[in-house]
Length: 214
Image 1 (cartoon, rainbow, N blue to C red):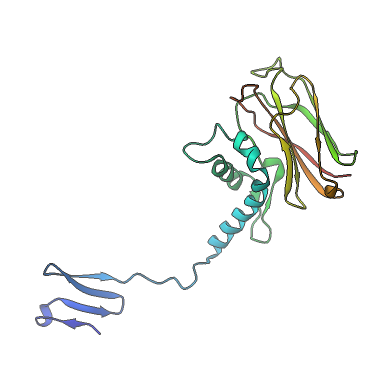
Image 2: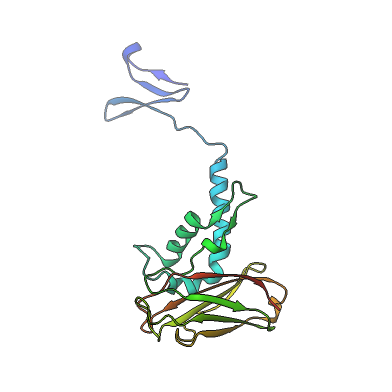
């Protein structure tokens, strides 16, 4: 219950509805009471949290790869946060929480100005391994024969990854990653990129496609 001091023209002490009266250094004032939010889980908030969790499940298994892949895109934040921002804004698709998913061809696990892989392919026919192949384009743009390949195998069924940030040179044209036997029969998403020998420049990653582990 509120009280009015000094008659009708006096200050208000207490609250009436959403109005609160008080006094500070003999100065009477009133303010509105903040509205309580009974359910902060609005549709927009639920959607954003769902998108974040989906992106997180994709990025966490590739964290050490991302630390290198996004090294030139930190902009006063961590490589992981930069990658999260990119994935949320460019590679999470869908119209409702039940429909959201990673659009793997749109996802980048590395970003940079170095020349990208040319005609990258993969082979999952041999149990326990994935073979990557590409054309040597070291004579083009700023690519170098000694650039190291960056290879990623993401198991979308188990949420696990196998990768390297220092694979065979660009001029070699092929590289192999050993994968766990437990991956057999699982769906794999394949990516590759390049990093200079001194580690200063990286390329955008390239999505090579998906396949089933032998």
